[in-house]
Amino acid sequence: MTPAHLINASIPSLDKEGWRVAPGWFDPNPQPINLMRIHNARPLKPRRKELRAGMTPAEIRLWQALKHSQLEHLKFRRQHSIGPFIADFYCPAAKLVIELDGSAHDSESAQQQDRERTAYLVGLGLRVIRFENREVMENLEGVLAEIKNRVRG
Image 1 (cartoon, rainbow, N blue to C red):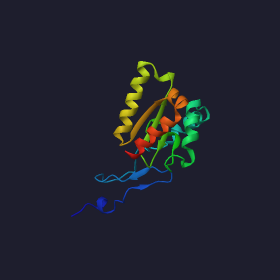
Image 2 (cartoon, rainbow, N blue to C red):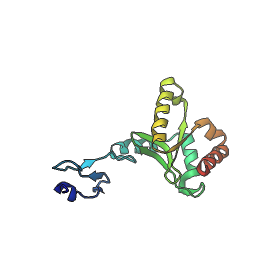
Image 3 (cartoon, helix red, strand yellow):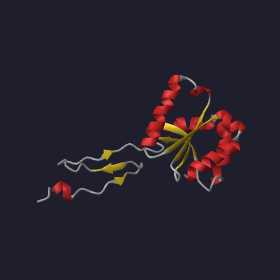
Image 4 (cartoon, rainbow, N blue to C red):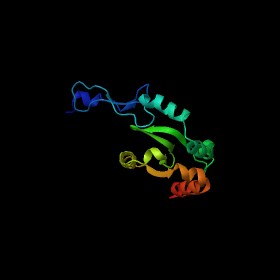
């Protein structure tokens, strides 16, 4: 005989804020469970807006080449949060994260944070590619060619 709470258990659904809600399967008094919203979580929205308003010259230059699906007809997003991190650029269709590194990434602690961020993103099944700001400013065509290669492969 099947317990009543299993018969009445509903299929997980999204609430009005986009959070996945699922009943407790083995709890006699099921309660909704909010799982973490991975993409563009609301608490990071003010920081994302701040980063978009204060983009570096290299970010602006690369964004000019990526926006409006100009590269391989792929939609890129700028300052897109994934989990606790905010990616400089993200292409959902290619599952590709593009990070631009400036002088702030030169310290050992910053490089360790970059490794942790990359490991987290790769753990979600995303591909991560990093460029130095200098590369974008001096060789945009080469950067775009490398992004195209990563998208294809």
